[in-house]
Image (cartoon, rainbow, N blue to C red; front, side, top):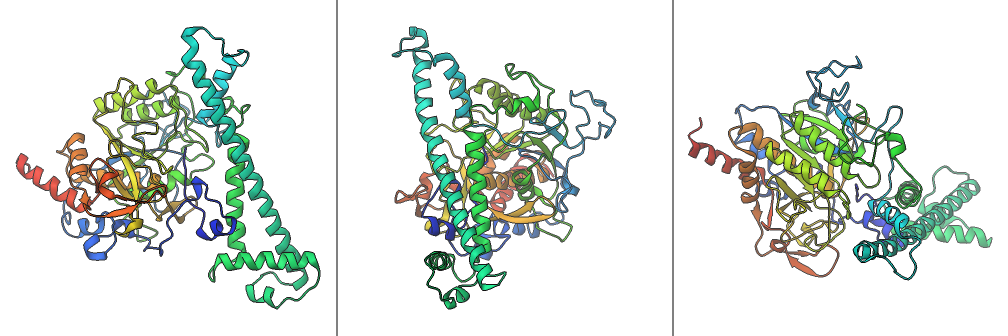
Amino acid sequence: MRKLTFIRTFLLLVITLSPAWAQEQTSIPAPKDWFLRDPEQDQLQGVSAEKVYQTLLAGQPSRTVIVAVVDSGVDIDHEDLKNIIWVNEDEISGNGIDDDKNGYIDDIHGWNFIGGTTNNVKEDTYELTREYVRLKKKFENVENGKVPKKQKAEYEQHLKNKDKFEKLKAKNEQQYGLYKNLQGNVILSVDTLKAILKTDTLTQQSLQDFNTTDPSLLFAKGFLLNLFKNIGPEGSIDDLLGQLKEAVDYFGVIVNYGYNENFDSRLIVGDNYANPYEKNYGNNDVKGPDPEHGTHVAGIIGADRKNDIGIKGIADNVRIMSVRTVPNGDERDKDVANAIFYAVDNGAKIINMSFGKSFSPEKIVVDKAVKYAEQKGVLLIHAAGNDSENIDEKKNFPSRYYADGKEAKNWLEIGASAWGSDQEFVGSFSNYGKKSVDFFAPGVEIYSTTPHNNYKNQSGTSMASPTVAGVAALLMSYFPELSYLEIKDILKKSTRKFDTLEVASPGGSGNVKFSELSNTGGLVNAYEAVKMAQLIKTQKGVK
């Protein structure tokens, strides 16, 4: 599931609610390219990418590295991405033939595992909903817990699922109703006062100057003035309406799709969902109906550094392979596994996975794909999640840990950091874990590409993961003699440490030492990583 932190502080002040999707840092905005900047030169806790290119890598040769973005889709025609999109040279575009015999017809720029012959999946249910429905069919007629002993554990799990499902569904229906009601009140008040004042734009001053004894108009005036007070001098009613629409849309998807027992997206895909090992379904539409998240991720990794427009990505010699797998809802294990297999088989050396969920009913299928990637020397980089939780204790999938308890050697788990080395250094939304998270990377207010040649700030571990993928691609590109295990080891050992830094604990439970939030206690840094790679290269005697 893709969780973004896009709602503004003033909206939280207005409605005094703080849903998980609405959390973000409240500091003064940083420069748009802060995540590329250097801590010493710029006093910003970026990855030092610009410093690397200006000093350590100036004039050095590099090879092209393919990075698979397993996500919601990528706008492959974006002005800042079109020159770095992977092209399958063994496939002839549009001829309806599987020219390279890989099982996927016309897969020119990647593949879409959540598409069918005539349509694409946009929304989907949550894994909790799917598990609740599956076990409900099995146990709905059970009376007083009378089940065979061998089904006891599964029945107990069903009861837990049922309780969690019903509570979350009710909570989100309440949130949806609240936001819709608030939106309706704002729109009604705005439209009424605009008509009476004969203006297209309401200002705080025009409302203060408006005199009336009509009770309904007095309410509308007071209501909007209170909103203005919370919005601040730079905000506007239109801004607020836009944020409210996002909130209504967000909770609308949750209620109408996420917790909808009767919705089945696989009718669109047309696969045999009962067969988790099935391949060769989907279509070649790697954009899909909503590629914003994947497009933002792709830009962080490698937006064109040579075209003097938009932004600069971290890696300067990559090709982005779009593997569409993540809907607005929870991704499915079968699709995740197939996405990994596809990326590995088609040459990706790094796979970015900015998604996650708390259930994985077919984990064994994903484990098989992760092991395959490990055998082929492909590095997997995964976002730790945006629930402000300790994932040493809370389940978060996909995971580096196989079902047998062993650990994937090709896995990195990433938390999200901000630009300043103070209490707000860690994203308030970021998951963490002394055992499960490897290190942190810039993930708060990251300015990157969005569809239709646009750009915007987004926050989340979804942004931190591609930051690391970009640094990993940079290392693979300039140091081809290094294995994926050496790249992973360098990334971990070269992190910048903050031994005495105490930060606000994600979730708001006091302060905690930053060094306790991951197993390295560090922050990714390309400059230190390249220096370490150069040293290893010298030790190997490579010129």
